[in-house]
Image (tube, rainbow, N blue to C red; front, side, top):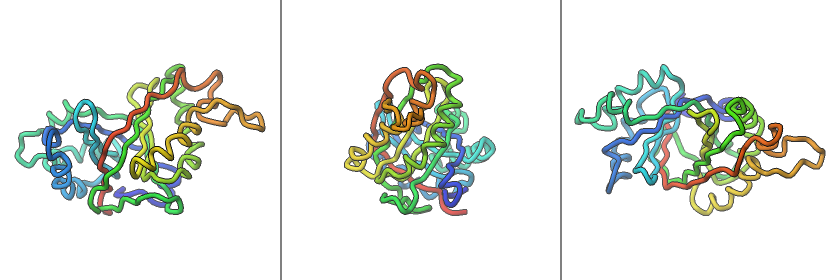
Length: 239
């Protein structure tokens, strides 16, 4: 896949989203360690974006894989790229990694944002993560449909590069956005919330004002649980 363009950009790309707590990316010098490993990581096929974000549970390394097969074939080269000493093994990767189904979109060029170029240096970003509580697990299909319907509205919000969702628990999907900086995050988070959560009906009476209103009785049981994280994001070299 390498990067997202054309129809994949417009329609999104199904992904496997892996999150790993990598020992060499913890503590002081995390950004330097990631930047040093970036070229080797970028050369691994079968993925699009990757990077790190800081959390209360340490620094997390994320990868958007194209498929299960791509991830399976990429784990060996990945652990070598992350730690050439051999101290971090494939078993360690499996133990330290959560994998979720999801979907990824990139902002169109006509919407103002900092573009992350394939193969270029990692770009500082603010990662927003929202956990959504669905009324019931079967609503995950409606949530996915809602994201597909509303993605042009989200795409129109300036100041972000990539966004999407992932889930392991079908009752608690998580949305993510990579904002250009704190200012763009502050400017964009309310329009994004309106697309996802707003309850007021459309003037024409339709129930598609927001993703929340697309389900009978409301998609979500409560407001989303939101957090924001300093991050670095990179895009796989074109292959």
